[in-house]
Image 1 (cartoon, rainbow, N blue to C red):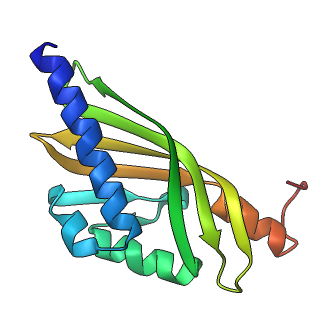
Image 2 (cartoon, rainbow, N blue to C red):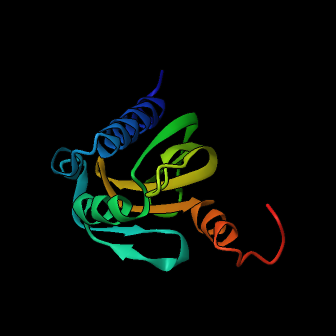
Length: 141
């Protein structure tokens, strides 16, 4: 294994540990995985600057939520030297009213620099599902 492959493997492990800590939720421990100036961008463009902020947001949106990882991949960005990690799978948990869910697709894209997460971009089906549940979806899911 060359140095580049080792760094990609380390980035994948770092991100998966960050996600595991975020699911507990333990935002204080998760924060040790991010760099100063960290940016977290959720679906719809909501911006947060710490794992604690996103945990507080999720506490309002879900009674509880976890991620079932399907795949985690990493690649070097040749222009910047950063590493991008892509984690995809399904969210499962309960909405605030106690209704369970388990097939809410997500993809998270992480940018790592010098071994720390500098940015996370999060996309999932939650907004579309909530629109459908409220009768506001343009087409059925």
